[in-house]
Amino acid sequence: MTSLLDRLYAGQSNKRLFFRQGWGDLPLLKNLLAAGFRIPPAQDLTIVWGHERREKGARIRQGSYVSPFDAPGFPRESRTGYIELVLPQAAKQETPVCLHFAATGDEGFARRRIVLALPLVRHGIGSLILENPFYGKRRPPGQHGKMLNRFVDLYLMGAATVQEGRSLMQWLRREGYGRLGVCGISMGGHMAAQVGALSESPAAIAACITPHSANAVFTEGILKDYLAWDVLNRELNGSCRAFDFVRDFLNLTDIRHYPVPANPRACFLVAAAKDAYIPPESAMILHRHWPGSTMQWLKGGHVGAFLFHRRDFLAAIVKAFEQL
Image (cartoon, rainbow, N blue to C red):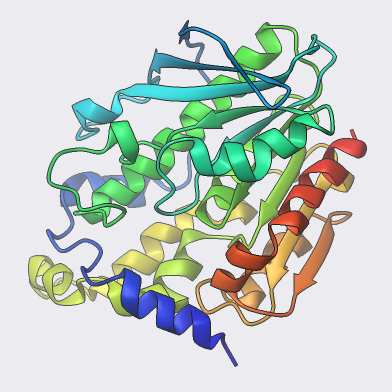
């Protein structure tokens, strides 16, 4: 049985539907589906840094860069990326650094800084926090919070986040940091899993309440009830079912398309046994694809994991780095 808290939260937080403006660039989506799974090369980027400040034993500064992602339809507002670097005061090149990806609706840096990055400083681990395209200062006008207007926006957000994540890992290596990792919760965990799997060197990976594919979230989990299916079906003009197209397209994000991480022992997964958003079997698919990874099961659901198990997420990151 799935979590009652998950179902109550889904009903309250999704008053608007995802993709209520339809597919967006449907020809682009069809071309991408026809082309199949592809991995573009990582690209260099240049970061412009702001002033440094001190907080709770950490050195913190924010930076910006031009996104290396430039697909048609990528909003002008999302083309500038924003990050926050949180390092121990005595940090040096040997200091491990973890790249943090955002969960659905997690805008800005404050939540991840307070919940994860500052506690990680006490373990001697630095953090680089990425603001998602389509979120916060990168949110295009007319988008209500996390509710993406068009299905193509989901592709653009995910592809851009992975591309930027790979470029940021490359930047950290170029700066001399050798012990690198990635982490994320929910959608952020899926982004972390993809970037970690594609890392040029062994990386610590902490993926918490994470699906193996976006398909599991939007066609199997509770969010399938909060998509504008009537609009999506109408725009297809009977050529196929919207559900089938969404399922087939999102299968491109299946982690099984990606290589197994170079050091699976440094992969720590946390899953919720009663998760209504991410079917537990989806979490197991990820675990099985990474033989040697560690899986921890929580008793509750997705929302309860967010509210009550942050220490487990933090511990997963620390343990992942201990295996590098």
